[in-house]
Length: 259
Ligand code: PGA
Image 1: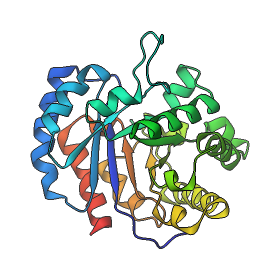
Image 2: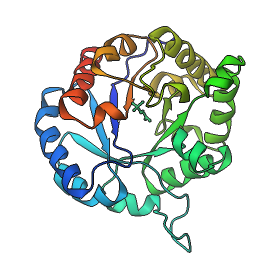
Image 3: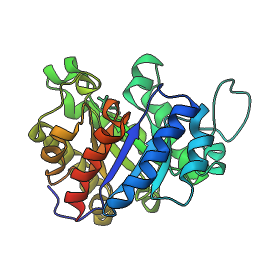
Image 4: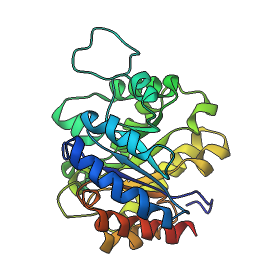
């Protein structure tokens, strides 16, 4: 458990929803209302197609632009892919890496996810490394082992000075898009496990400063309980990030934690 004070971060993952016009319309709403919550870092992750419009709309505002995915390389023959360098040119601050939908539906391996983390850092884009166990893994008592394996590969080979640029998102797969969120205690247990994983391996500033977000059916109604936990530094939000009021309710709860 950690008592360090980290600035909360809330990221809305819009997944494969909202084309450029709809995405821009939500960005217009958010850029005004988010000004009321200065104690929180806020980001939104539209589809690649909507990124240019949203990045333009949110330039010089309090809302950062986040990508949902990337390829590790700078450029080359990788049909259909987007590089971290291209994201940086567009003004993207963070990039999700290893989201469970990428791992499960698109077969991304732990080591490929680690390459993406390193590719982001090379380009100056801040990776949000997503980890989390499936229900079968949790029921088999393997939640911590799975998270540890994903952290080992995701953080492999990173110099300690770069670790401070990484954010971790713990997202139990059984809680994503299911309406079944982890209880604050269940989430805190794994967050504390991740914090002690960092403490055991790196200098103290890493575990003190690295933000660990919770994701999986976060809503306005459960955000305060989750964000009240010692090691939960913010939220990665899917469904509830698609409408202004639902998302803002979560940002407001994070603002409470940060104030
Ligand atoms: P959810 O998605 O909030 O809809 O469960 C979270 C995520 O996948 O990041």
